[in-house]
Structure formats: C-alpha cells, structure tokens
Image (cartoon, rainbow, N blue to C red; front, top):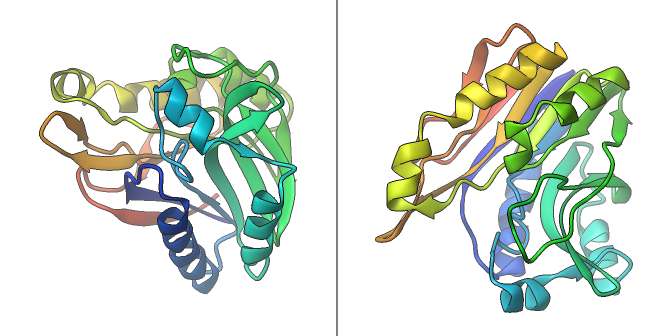
Length: 237
C-alpha cells in the first residue's frame, strides 16, 4: 500500500487554481500507483480566519459545484484527502473529505478549534480504501492525543493530518520546530503511521515553512519535504 502527501504553495480564494494543482498532484499520484494522497488544510478555497471570506468561499457538499468537482476527479484511481471549507445550512466547518473515483466516501470535521469562523466537529470517523483503514485529524488537532488514539482504537493504521501553518512571521519562527514533535507523539501514542500535509508561504508579514512528513509508528520520520519547498513524498505502509 502506497500513501503520499504533498506540500504546496498556499492559494487563497481561487478554486479554479486549486483544482488545477489538485489534478496535477492526482495525475502524478496515479502514475506512481499511489493508493491515498493527502493535501493541506482548507486547500480547495484557502484557509482563512475571516468570517466574510469563510461565508463567500464555503462549499455545500450537496451542491452541483461539488458534484462537478467529484466528476472532474472521477478518472483517478488514487483516493484523495482534501481540505476544504464546508457549508451546511447556516454552519461552516473546517473539513477534510475523502474522495475515491469520483465518489465522496466521507468527511471529517475539525474537532479542536481556536477559530471563531468554524463550528467544531464531534466525531472521529474511520475510512477504508483498498484494505487500509485510516482516519483524519486537522492541524490544531495534532496538539491533542484523543483524536489519534480514538482512531487507532477503531482500527486505523494511518492518521492523516492536513495542516496549514501559515502564521505571522514571528509566530511562525517560534513554532517552526514544534510541529514535528506533535506528530511524533501522536504516532507513538496511537502506534500507527502519521502523515501530515502543509503549505509553504514566504510573504512580508506571514511565513509557512511547511511541515509535511511521514512518521512511522515508532516515531521515526521516514519522509519529509524540505522547508519552504513544494514537493510530494511517497511511502509504503
């Protein structure tokens, strides 16, 4: 079983541009015979803390726009974990969907929030693709052990962590070396693989070094994309 993760440039509010990158990543994953590919937190529309942007960018998973996106991704054999901003009735969620051959297999809504523009999820579902059982946590969830442990108890062999560590520059520098230890701790506690996918940003006021890595159940980093670089890493699990 091959899993892959990508570290990508942050794209804000341009679904068309994001879908172009998503298709490029999926084409490569298919060529490499990858079974599951993970992309960053809210990658489809761009992560935001702004309530107005959240409302304007949010996507209803029952909408024709979303079904058109599923159809666009239907030709790929690789399953995709994609971060997006979800709208359901009057609520907005930081969500990661699991898409396989043009079908929505399910979704995970971020449980641990510091954001005021989202509502929290309340469950830790597991998914199975080609015999591999896995779960998802999102970014800030990585600071807490309960999610990974709950997924492992349900049989998850891998926990995927879509991230978006675009931060004000001073904060980015402070937390630069704190992200990996969180992932290592979660892998050890749950005794499962941990896979993160992050963005890279290099702006005047914001930085995103990128923390895209694959960690084995013993807590060893077996693959990592270099900081401030785009790239994909693939690993057999």
